[in-house]
Length: 79
Image 1 (cartoon, one colour):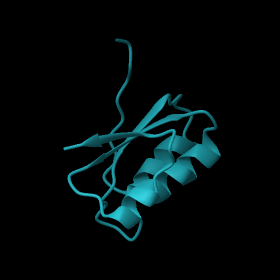
Image 2: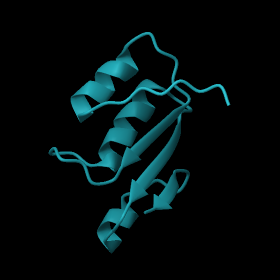
Image 3: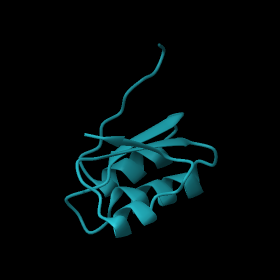
Image 4: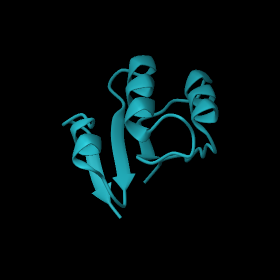
């Protein structure tokens, strides 16, 4: 379908990729990250750097508070 995939092992690495010259259309992130931030925080930061990017957030479990932190325009994929 014509997409190139870039994987990042950390939030820092993801933001470095975003700041590179690569052209991004979609951010796919898990909600639970192994660092101090979560997927919603990462998505907001990426949106500030790439206006109009589509966001897909995956999660196996979201608390009510977690779900409330998601932007309604993002797609949630439950796994």
